[in-house]
Length: 211
Image 1: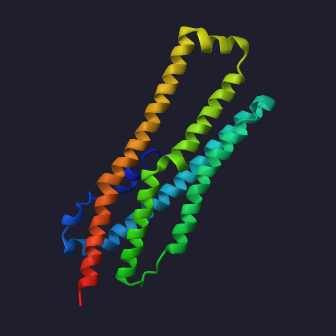
Image 2: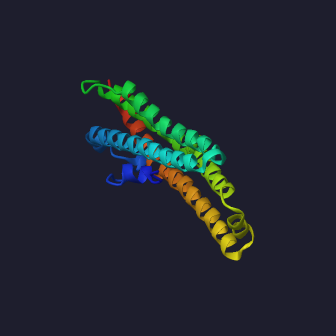
Image 3: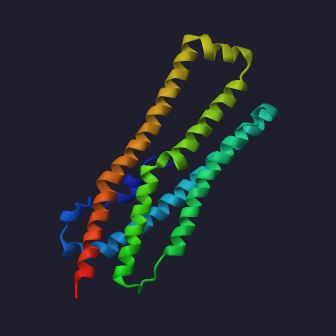
């Protein structure tokens, strides 16, 4: 799955400066940035959903070949498909809330602020809906693969230094990977989402204050 969604979405944009942003510049760049964000979110949701389906197919194939002992893989498949389904739901939600090109600027501004706040909640609370299910799926796959080993394989994994080193390295690598995903998304909230929300709220205050 794509671990760096917000880096992809914001890579080609200047970092927002927050409440200190120039109002004239905010008005000039609002529409291009709004469209670029929408395209980035669309690409993210499609890529994540497709990756989830692909991973689920791989897990299902592994479980099928493990035969009866591989039944827990069905749980892993369900967890991964659940994450993929979440991104499909995001696409449906975005489509329902999409405004027409002739919508007033204030309506587009309100919709963009609401979208950014929604994305902020998702990224700040990424464990329950994204990382948690994936970690659980990986743990199930690892445990099922271990149970499918023969006696010699289990013995080497549990007692041989090479097997223990591989297992410990795998656990550390996975832990570092998921910590990195959490860290990247928290950083995206602080450096991109929060300042951009401040910019748009400033622009909204200016528009509503005009006679």
